[in-house]
Length: 132
Image (cartoon, rainbow, N blue to C red; front, side, top):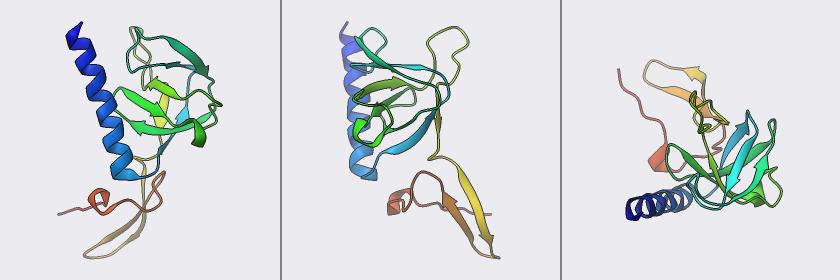
């Protein structure tokens, strides 16, 4: 349908925007065997499976899809689209994102020093700001 095609293009554009903004792919742990699809839709051709315990790198196209960068992943040649959650009723996570994990390194009266796992040096637009 036209709506499905439009949605696919939006997800692809999102991944391209993430690639341009971040420069490097983000890191994810594969917590359950997950399918790799040719396009960001469960109705596209399945081109492989990435096994539980692997690490993949890619660019988020949406909250639901990651564009796997095979050159920087333990996915072999399985470049494609991986869903973040299973499609079944309970929608269990298949990918665990490293990039959103912050660790407090030092605390000051007017500042915090944190490390951002999965993103060594975030671009200025993605640096953490906080207020009290």
